[in-house]
Length: 157
Image (cartoon, rainbow, N blue to C red; front, side):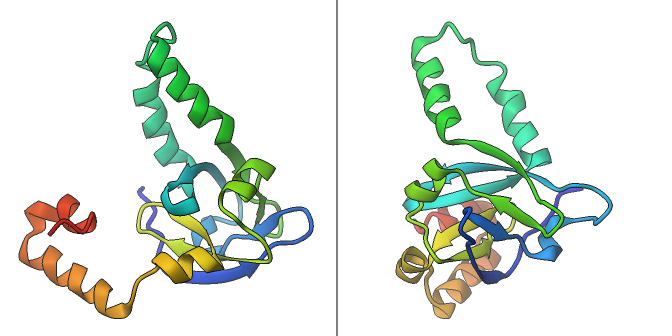
């Protein structure tokens, strides 16, 4: 089952860089919810559910570790990536590298980006988050030209 992440939440970090993940994004209370955190564009953290990350891993596993350029790219990704599980209170802890990369402190904005969760600093979300009108423009374009969805989402159409 593909999970869908919707909504926007502002949560604060505690002194150990832990933040609560909204309950509707955590799934069943009977099992620990696992995520993978990766650096994203515009100083965000991309939070992928374990099943989505497994899809990425199946492609990565086909890359030869003897390929010098690919190996370096994987090392760059791996040094910043993090696996995590929600604790009993629904919190995850952000690594110092990712916390610094995303310019986080105090509060963060957790954004449901359909297939992933994005973690933004309040400052960067205010800068890049867009307006309601921009959202409506994108929805209209997707309805008019669904075959061009990738280009629409990139802002090229």
